[in-house]
Length: 312
Ligand code: GLN
Image (cartoon, rainbow, N blue to C red; front, side, top):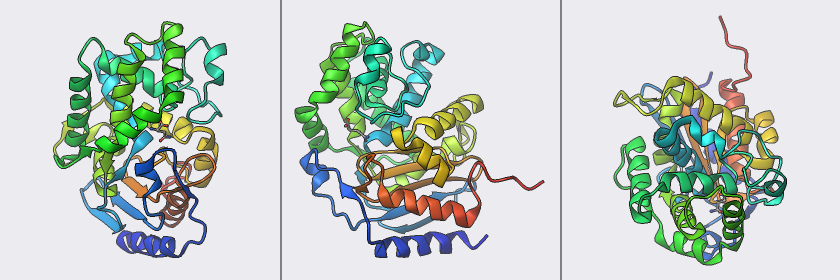
């Protein structure tokens, strides 16, 4: 294997030249104005070494990548009970699709679809206060990353809230099936705020470390989830983390990964690396065009795919 820092630097240089950068999400103004030429990458190893290049320290809207952290927190709160209200199967549908909800009685296919993440937000809310739940989520992510500077971009949250008619429809539809305990507005307030978390690649890769090391933050030794739960969250990321592009992501990259419409992707090479990439241009499935290409190249050069034979 070539030197990791070199690989990461080379990939960032290659991405600077890439002609097809995809299309920046334009459904809300704060995302539409992000510069499409941005690219960042951060790779963190279990020994704490960090390899970064490009715009790795520039915060961006993590959007649906936050669904991994929300799921982790909700599983901690209610355990496997959660699976009575959310499935664990890939959907083959767009992230904001409503079609399966009717035939499947308001139970979303998986926790990474918008509908699934809205149920997870409702679970996080429990019987508590909206503002406290949002605060708890922010503290959780700050704790995972070991960085108090991580913040929620209120302009993004407000814009999502003002234009989130489809998410509102999903939430109300699930409430009609009895799969939402709180009013749709409250569950959505939690949802849009965790989607509005602003983080850099370095912060995101740090926040994902517990998934590379069987549930433990290597730096502190603090256990976040059991090894079994870490494995299972990784399995869900592999099968469902890129919506109807999950098969393609497994084929090209071969790592558990979670994308967001802000152009970020968190990918985990179990035992080996926590990786975050960011490039705001998206492909037709709403996944980062260059983020995926960069991960494909990283895995090709390191042999980190989970489908790679392990030497004995
Ligand atoms: N906040 C976005 C939405 O609800 C998240 C979607 C995503 O990142 N795929 O539409």
